Amino acid sequence: MISNKDGKRKVITFCGSSRFHDLFHELASEYTRMGWIVLMPHCYYENDSRPDLKDLLIEIHRDMIEMSDAILVVNKDGYIGDSTKEEIKWAEALHKEIKYYATPLKTAEST
Image 1: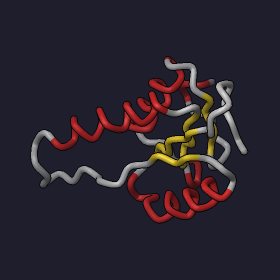
Image 2 (image 1 turned 90 degrees about the vertical axis):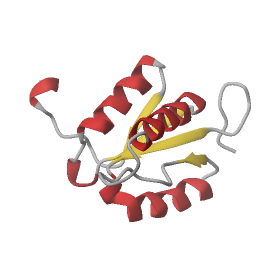
Image 3 (image 1 turned 180 degrees about the horizontal axis):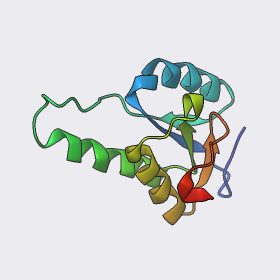
Image 4 (image 1 turned 180 degrees about the vertical axis):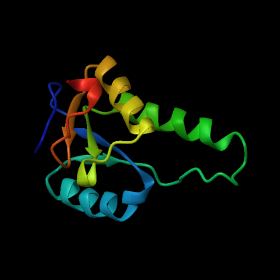
């Protein structure tokens, strides 16, 4: 069993663009088979959605990160959008383990 320091099964939250929705599900199956509890978005904000939905979804996703031992940045082809960058910062502030689907590309900010 993949366990945390308290001996409980590890929890991971997936972070990344909604354009990778199908990949999220593929990876969720893989991580579940490895023994992780997987949290990920199941609802996405669309510009025509109710006005408060975006803020609600951000809050819920931050709560998922807080509950987790780690995050997986689903950065297919190295893509990391602004929202995902904020989620990474949040996870770092909470001292969460950060995993990447693809090796992160160096950006002007990180050089």
